[in-house]
Image 1 (cartoon, rainbow, N blue to C red):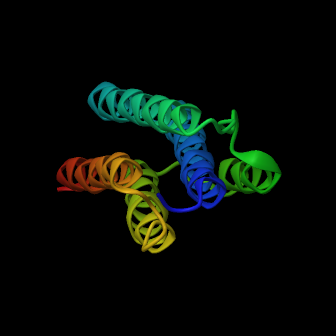
Image 2 (image 1 turned 30 degrees about the horizontal axis):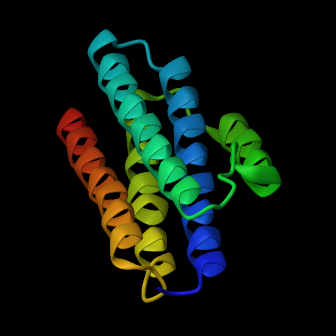
Length: 143
C-alpha cells in the first residue's frame, strides 16, 4: 500500500476542503430567502456532511487522525467568504457553483492524483462526484 501518512494527509486535505464547503453552504443558506433554493442548498449541505463522515472513517481505518474543521486557512477563507458574499440570489448560486467546481472538483482531482490506495481513491472519487452533481443541481436553479 502507498505510504499511509501521505494518504492520510491527502484525505485530510480533502476533508478540510469538505468542511470549507459545508461552511460556505451555511453562508449561502443564511442569505437566501427563496424557500426552494434554501432547501436545495440545505440538502446539498447534508450530503457534504455525509462525505465528511466517509472521509473521516477512511482516515480512521488507516489509523490516522481525521481533521475536525477546515483548519486555520479555511477559517480565514470562510470569514472572507461570508463578508464578500452578495445578497443577490443568482450571485449566491453562482458562488456556490464556482466553489464546487473549483475546489470540490478541480482542486480535489488534482490533490488525489496518484498517491491514493484503491479504497481511499474510491472514497475520494465519490466525494468529487458528489460535488460535480451538486454543481449541476445548482445550475438548474439558476435557469
